[in-house]
Image (tube, rainbow, N blue to C red):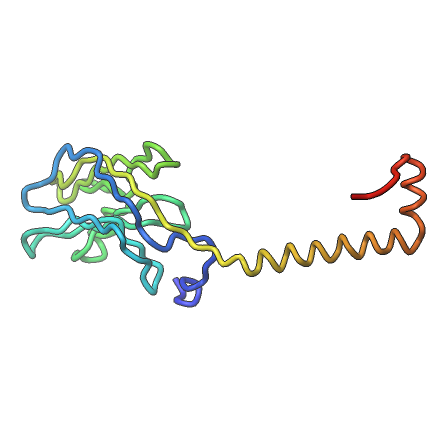
Length: 176
């Protein structure tokens, strides 16, 4: 993502708040789960929720990140070549887990099941909160513009003596 777009306060997720590991059914002994609570959005738009780190250099790492565009959690495989990365993303053969099952969209609750190289890496349920930021300056300008248009419309009605006519017709004594 363009760093200028990342800096815009347009309501996108900016920070990971409370990460709740609700259940760990399985964590491979060669891995550790690292929660990234309090993580801020990076310059490229990357917002990391958790990492699953290998204890050995020969094994891949995994990264749970927020996908703002699709409004979901994505898991990426790291320290691998492009072909292995594509197999994981597409769930081909001995790989799965790039798109966890959504349990509850409003709570951002996901059932995670990561398999790579035909080895079960992690199974569990995780939920988290996101901090979003919106610059309301533009919104207030829009409201101000609408307010001006309404005032101008009302002035036009007064100038054309339409408002007194309508008030008389509908028996309105005064406007509040």
